[in-house]
Length: 297
Image (tube, rainbow, N blue to C red; front, side):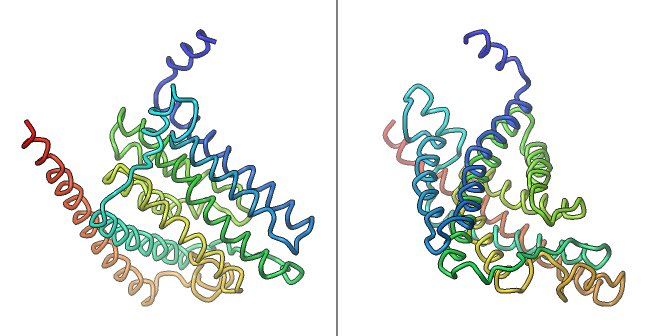
């Protein structure tokens, strides 16, 4: 056992971080995928899959954030997960910055959709599934994505790479892995990689500036829930080109393309400003926390 641990420690930190992050993500996403499918096949009138997953997700959260046994690794798990509480002022600044980042990401996808054919999500025939079960699965799926992916990607994967290679490299590496990990989705294509990397950067910078996954977790879960409800209502995915189907938005470089580009530039500018305000709020909070410590000395 000791030789295995010694060999694992000799593996470069970035590789260890990627492997650990994917393992943590799999531990949360695979059980939910199985439960959701089983619920749709058996006793679909009762959303039992979501109920079982709620218990599992609570245990998952406690373990991977270092709030449960074994005590010998609790401190490491707590640090790696980045599940650190934040003040109200930092929370507000982080949510504003994150929302602007997400809006910019969606606009980027729509802009790309005017140049190339974008995949269009569809859910098929869901008329035989009770509305309560459908909503429960959508809500739990969004919560699982927010909790599991933020702990795994922004915590266990990004944090060690950040410490070894810096935040820019960490966010880029995690963005690529994050985008490729979504290749399990039925409607996935390489043309969506810029969109997923922009989303990953939005969450990654939040986690880096605040050293916490809570803002990105809230935005991730909330955004996924809104997207799922929009999809279930027949509106298509938020990132799809306006007009519906996969080819409806492909119009080339025309007047509307340039208007969208200008709007995107304006939102990106606003997002950069918001992230700067967030960094200032984090610095102010840190300085305020140091004052009582200095007075005690």
